[in-house]
Structure formats: structure tokens, C-alpha cells
Figure 1: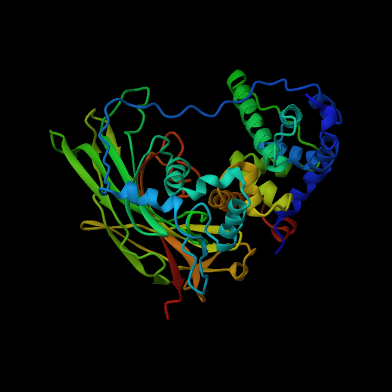
Figure 2 (figure 1 turned 120 degrees about the horizontal axis):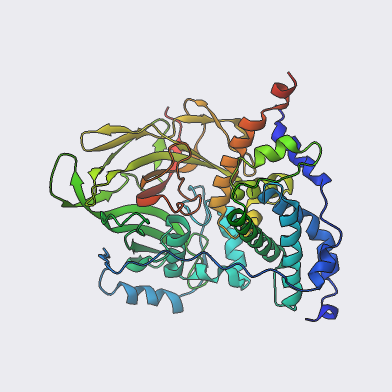
Length: 351
Length: 156
């Protein structure tokens, strides 16, 4: 079935720029150079939750200047990359750019710089504190990211959220050693600390929330499998008396060729957490090859194995009609990301 | 400025400017003036850089889109209620539908499906990650599908 929007896009070829633009360009710039957007306001009161293993920074530094460069063997195992690339071919392309000395990808050679970039571009934490929690393997490190409280709205500052913290795994997936680029391969929800007044109570209490997906990176997940996540959900009022309710968004994504299909699951509350099904949608046939267009098929079981990931995000202020999607850019200014966990998995047919 | 040392700017302009201009046109939701200004300005800065830009393709896209975004913000601040967009003949439905998308979705959809750029080149042009482009494409596609439908539905 031909889609009209694709045909209509071709109509844009009829349009041409004004003929004098090159002459205008040769007369020199006329407009002020746009400045990057201002970073978030940094608040003075900071309770940063940083988990750093002693000596880990030194261990990380040891990764940079030494060792040999070795191509990673790529077999039939699923590609575990989440960010910046979720496909092996894209990661190999980035490695080639780095090998060629492309300055735009040199930050990929430093896991700490990669983590900082991830914090800004995915979580929206431009002021993240980065600390290496574990550099136990020469090709993989675990980095903790923590951030300051979100900026105060003009109406006043509800000091409910004191700190947020996630852990991310970084690995060298194409080439190991000092010339190898680093990729984010998992996001652990970590912890957040909130000053919180539950519904019906008078006093505030300090609550520590923790989010962790009970899945291993790269593990097989059967189509339709239910994932259970223990989670403290905060519903009540903050210490300024404002109504506060978190939104828990959970689901999964299929990765096929040039596209990622993100599907939100129906989240069912349980006694002490949430449960949601993953991999419960079939896919249309064009997701079979790299370059194919992904589109969710009818509900039903997968008929073939497929790479993807499972995610849970805890947010505040997200538009229910168009919820914030992990890896779709940082959350907009009116959305606060409280916690996030993402694990790449290998979806397989249930039977 | 050393125009004589950049003999390939005219060639680059001929090869790249129409597609770049259409990308900015799509990004701005169909504003010709913004597309003209952004493309002329991006090339002006390329000329001014005097050969310092190593990858003019992605550089021009990023600069032109950034300029267009600034112009749109400026226009929106000065004329918050103005929505003056003249639709070229035959493009009304498409541009109305495109304006329902976010600017990033519009740009990703245009560059990937109209200009045939692979996703990683779209990411380079937009100055974002491959994963983010995929999400923009997914959402943009779904939105256009729901707004414009299919040939059969349209004809039938």
C-alpha cells in the first residue's frame, strides 16, 4: 500500500531557493550568531549522591595510555549497544571516523567524556557529576552520573527532589584499547532522594527510591514476557504543598535497520512495584533486514528473534499523549526525569 | 575573506543548496524567508571560515538549522500570533501535516525520506545521535501516516 505522505514529500522537489542567495552569501554574514541554549540554573543547595569506588579513577586513567588496539570479534551474538549507536554497522562507522582522526568523534575515546555526553544528550543533565564506579574490565567500565535538583519554576521552588543518580555501563564494542570508541550498553536506574509528604500525612519524610530492571544485558526475553520491577512510587504533596505525582513509563523497543520502534506497555501496579509485558507485538515483514522500515504489526507473538531493549523511566510532567521517549533527545524543560533504566535484550519467539 | 581561495563554493552551492534549502523549508514549516536567510547566512559563514571547515556538508546543515531555529524563536517572540505561510500549489496538505510534527521530526523525515540520506548522515546533519533520529523518524512517520493516510484511502 503506497503511503500518501511519501509521495507528497516528493512534491518538495518543485521548490527552489531564491536565485540571489549565493550573491547574498558572498556579501558576508548578516545575522547574529545564535548562541547555544543557556544551561540550567545551578542551585546552591546540593545533595549529590555519588557512588565512587576508591581508586577507580586511577584504574580508568590506566585505560587510556596503555594497551594495544584489538578489533572485537563480532559473532552471532546480539549487538548490545544502546547509545550513540544501536546497530553494529553504525558503531563500526563511528570507529572508522575515530581511526581517521575525525575531531567530531574524539570524545568517544574517553569513557568519562562519553558518559558526560550521554548525561546531557539523553538525560538532559548538563551539570552531571561523573564518577567511575568500576573499571574492572579493560573493555568495560561502570560510571555513575548524578545531578543537581531540577531548576525551580517561576512560581517557587518545591524542594522535593534532592538528588538523582543513574549508573551506566560503557563498553568498547568494535575495537578495544586506547583507539577503541566507547558505547553505552545499559542504564541502571540508580537512586533518587526526595523530601516527600505522603497523602494524608503532616510531616515530610526523606524517601530513597531505587529503580533496577531485573534483566541482564543481551539476555533472551520471550515475546510477551512480563517484567516485574520493585518501585516506590511517590504520590502526594511536596514540601510546598503542591500536588505531586510521578509517571512511570515502561515498554520496549525493537531495533530494525534504519529505525527503532518504541512501544509503551500497559503498566500494572503491584503491591510493591509495577509489572508490564514486553515483546508482545509482532512486526511487519519489512523489519527483517538492515535498511527496512520498522512498523509495529498486530499484537501477537514475534515470529523471529530480534534485538531491542526494555526500558522503565520515572518522570514528572510528561505529556500523556506524547510521552517522553528514551534516546529521543533530552526531556523538554517542563519534564523532570527522575530515574531511568534500560537494558538491551534479545527478543525471541515465545515458543 | 578570500573568495578567490574558495573556487569550489559555487560548485558546493549548486550541489547542496537546493536540498539544504528544502530541508530548512521543511524544518521551518514552510517559511521561505527563513529558509532563504538561513541558507544564505550558512554559506556566508562558510565563505568567511576561509577553508577552516573540514566537512562542509554536515557543517552547513547544522549551521543553517541553528540559524533557522533562532529566526523562528525571534519571529515567534515578536509576532506570537502570526502564522503567515503561503502554501505553494499542491503542497498545502503536506505542509499543513508537516507543521503538526516537531521541527526535529520534520527535518529527520525530510532528510531521510525525501533527500535519501542514511540515518547516520541525518544525525550528523542535525547534530544529534543516531538513536534520536530514529525516534524522530518513528514519530514523524506515524504522525504523517495518520494525517495523510494512504493512496487507497485517499482515492477510495
